Image (cartoon, rainbow over all chains, first blue to last red; front, side, top):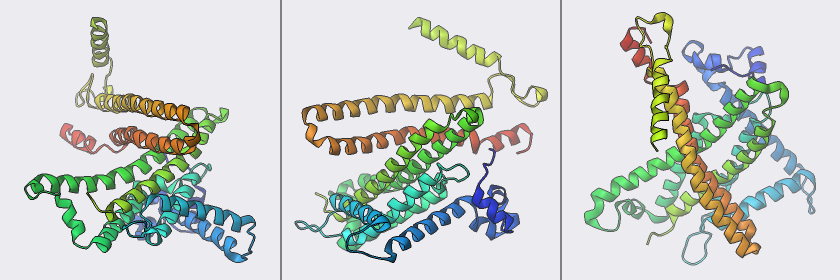
Length: 250
Length: 122
């Protein structure tokens, strides 16, 4: 496959850092620096930097009646908070309240994935989430965290739930449960990766075919929708896994 | 039905006879409907069939959502959110097929072995 032009990697290359797909493919020759400054990593750092700068601008001067960036951040965080509270057990009835443990992670997922997805729509940039390593990393955070939450709230009983309700069904139930949990890793990571990489490949092919007639423009409009929907799906499924690990099975 | 069978047979025979793969190296490579044609055909047909099934599933989902909104327009917002979530979950099945197709086309693990078997290096 041909390699697209990436502005951030070009800038880093001018500074003498081996950053780019060519260096990444021959990483054994250029050392660990080529892996640290691989294009998806560079764009991931860029998104993190962007989010930190936006947050600093928003929290610089706090007013009682919010304006500008502060208003934007308050609206965003409140929307995500309400959505989280709707979807995970928040202390009503006998269920535990896991909103304080889950909410920061959900905010990170939402903002990071959304900005990563939207970054790929700017020509000369790529989506970090169009790389299987990044999505697999995000998924492993979710997987490890929901097992930890289940262990924290249920103790060893959480692992006993894997064996099913009836003792003589254990040889049938245990492999099924384990496969269900492995399948979550694959489905959650490959869904995000596949959607984003298909968008990127479609944009590339349309640009090569009829770039001067603005053929990729409708796909870009579709890409905005896909970015938001995939972010929503990732956080919704994460919250479903969190609440499924914490709630009692009947 | 018979017409379709005949059409399919004609298409298959056309594929078999009209595809010299790497004709300049014909003594080493298999000519005709060979290994690489099979990979490309599998990628295309796989995504096509996946899109067929997912289209039917999405149609059922959207029909249910439309009927729900028509009966009770007040909850249109929540139904729409649920519908979009479900649609994206269905759509991801097509995306899995697409990923498999991309692996077949761009990162196929079998091609080096195949070339080594033929003695072409890999």
